[in-house]
Length: 449
Image (tube, rainbow, N blue to C red; front, side, top):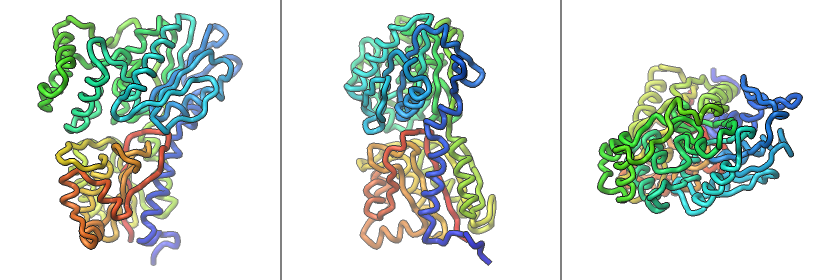
C-alpha cells in the first residue's frame, strides 16, 4: 500500500522544485551572515574572532559576488551608522537597496567595462584604510568576473578573450581562477596588498568544490598557492597557448622568469590581520534538501557534495545510479530522492545556447530514455545557468520521445551544446530568477514507487 503522502508521478516536478527551494532557503545570504556575525556591548563577534569596535577607527563594508548585496545589507542592519563607507559589486539584476554602501553592477561570466570601473573604485576605497580600521568583506561566487582589475600590461579585452577560451575548453574553476589571479591586481590576495595593514574579516559564501578559500572569487583576501608556472601549464594542457592574447602570454612568461612579482603566498605579512570564514556552502543546501525530501515522503540519499567533471559524463553516472535504484533498490529504494552537488564543466563543441546544468539534464534525458518513473532536475543555486535566463532543466524517461514527437533530436541538440532551446521547446526549463545566493549546482533525482 502506498504511503498516504507519497507524490504521484505527475507531481515529481513540483516535488523537485520544493526540494530545490528548501535548499536555497538554507543558504540565504542574510541567514548565513546573521547566524555567524553578532554585536554585543560594542564587541563584534565572528565565530571565535572578536573585534572591539571602540578601538576601531573606521569600519568599511565591501562586497564582491552574486550574493554580496544581500550579505552587505545584513551587515548594514547589524552595524548601521558604525559603517563609515562601503561599496558592493554584484551581477546585473542581483542588487538590493543599500543604505551605507554604494552598489555597482557588472558583467558575469564575462567581465565588462563596468566591472573594471567597480574594481578600481573598490581598490581606491580599500587604499584609504589603515591599521586602526576594519574592512568587512562579503565575498561570494561570481566575484572573479565582477571585479576584473586587469594586471599592468593587459586590458579588459585580453581578460575577456582569455576567460571565454577557458570557459569553453572544459577547464575546472580552480584552473580558470589560477589564470584570473595572475591577470589581476585584486585577486589572489591582491586586495590585502592595498589595505595598508587594516584588519580584514571576510565572510564567504562558497561556490567551489571543497570550499577552497583561494578559489572562491579567486581568493581576494587569501594567500595564493598557484604560480605563473602553473598558469602556463594550464594553457598548454588545454592547447590554448597560441590562442590567448599576446599580452597574456607575455605577462605569464615574465612572471615565470621572476620579472613580475608573484601573487602573495602563505606566510606573507600582508595577511597578518586577515581572517577568512566560510558562512555557507553546498553542504548546507544539501542538508536542507534532504530534510525537505523526507517531509515529502521520499527516502533521501546524499550521493556527493563534490561532483565534478564533464557535464554529459556526470549525467551518465547519475542516470546509472538512478536506474540501479529503480531496478534493484540500491543504494536506496523508491520512493527516493538522490541528491548531489558540485560544479561540472562543458567543453564547447557546437554553437548552441545552454549551460552546464541544462547540458547535464539533456544528457541524462538520453540516458534515462524509457524510465518513466525517474525525474532529474539539475540547476544552479544562483538561479542562472550559462548565458541564459534559466537556472537549469528537468528531464525524465520521456524526454527523448516527447522531443521526437515535435521533431527534435536530443542527440543533435546535445552535440551542438544547444540544451536551452531544446528544453524551451519541451517546456522543461527551470526558471527561478536571481536567487541572490550561490553555492554551486544541485542535482535532484526523484524515483516514484
